[in-house]
Length: 206
Image 1 (cartoon, one colour):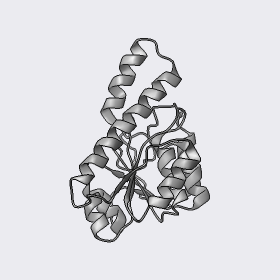
Image 2 (cartoon, one colour):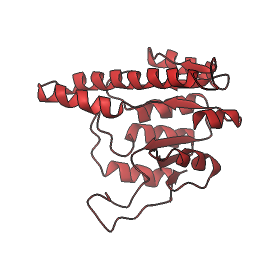
Image 3 (cartoon, helix red, strand yellow):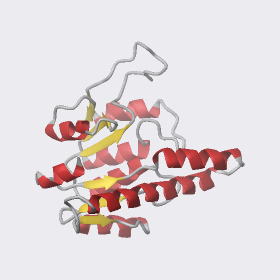
Image 4 (tube, helix red, strand yellow):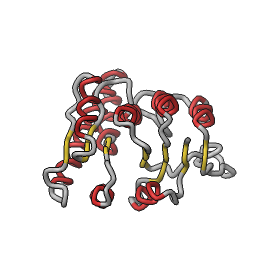
C-alpha cells in the first residue's frame, strides 16, 4: 500500500508500532516483576524491530533507495531528520523513549513535516460512542471534532504501553497543528488507500 501511494505521488512517513512482539515480551517481563519504565523500554525496542523489518521490506520493492529509516535519537534531532527526508524518500520511524506511544511519535512527525493527513491504522476500525466490546449498543462515529475526540479519550484511562484507542498527548498535538486524523482498520490495507481518497469506513477527526 505504501509503494502504491508513493507511486501515485503522495509523500509518506510510516511510524511502526510494536505489535504482537511487544505484547509477548512485555507480558513475560511483567510476569517476572518488571516495572513500568522497563516495560516501556521493551515496547520501544519492539517498535524498532518492526520499523527495521518494514524498511528492509520496502527496499525490496519498487522503492529501493527511496526509504529513509530514522533511527531515533534525542527527540528534536529525530524529527528534524524526518523533516529533511520527507518527500525525497519514504520515512520509516518507531518509538524513542518511555512514556510516549507511537501515536505520539506519529503526531510529532506529522506536525514537523506539516502533513495534511495522519492515518492511524490499527486493529480498531474507528471511534465508537462506547467500547463496542462491552456495549452492543455502541455505534461508530464517522466524524468528530478535535475537542470531541479529546473528550472521548479523557473518559478512558491512559496507561503507558497500553494505549487502547489513541494517545491523549498525540490528540492534543493534532488539535494544535490542525492535522486531519483518520482512524481505520489496518487489518484491511485498502482502508489506508480509501482514507487518502476520502471514502474510508473509519472515523475522521478534524
